[in-house]
Image 1 (cartoon, rainbow, N blue to C red):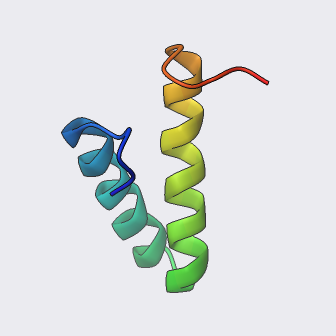
Image 2 (image 1 turned 180 degrees about the vertical axis):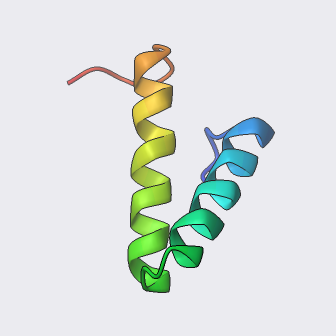
Amino acid sequence: MPKDWTEKDERQYEHIKASEAKSGRSSKRSRQIAAATVNKRRRGEGRTKSK
């Protein structure tokens, strides 16, 4: 888990990763999608640095 992620972020990541794997995605792609989704939510909440 990245150091800036909360426990909720980690739970969301695991849930999304499992969901993507269940729908037939490879494990690598499932991890990428899950991480991008969690980071997108964090960015929307203002918990990341802006570019």
